[in-house]
Length: 199
Image (tube, rainbow, N blue to C red; front, side):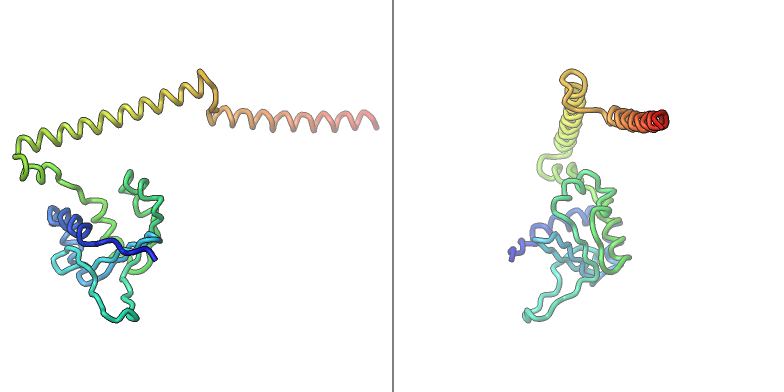
């Protein structure tokens, strides 16, 4: 069995984000005492919502035979995590949810709205002006990398479609399929005419 990861750093990171977003704490606080389990197959992580809307480890029990049933279980395929990270608005379309629908909806709402305020955290280390410049520079770098990635992808696609045809456009495949179907129908009609002429 896979050993459970140490939840303290993960819990602290999530609680740090929640502490910056009072609205998210209010949403979760309305579900205080409930336990959510994130089941990734090989790894299961569980948290209980505290009365202040932060996360904590669920109540432990020394008796290993006692099983704490979570209020909601969110099952996710670990291979889908990159897709979830790219499109957080559609994150819950990649998961299977069992249990309390209201609690699951609250988790979804919070997970979509939480944002890390990097500028705020950096300002504590380097000051306000440097933090603004670092975050702006980081955002510009990320935008530049995305633009470069997009251009490279478009150039490679054009190369393999036009200059060194190794790929085929979907419309060309559709046209070819329609032409083959039309040719087959024409051959069948011609064969029927020939058979009629023979008789």
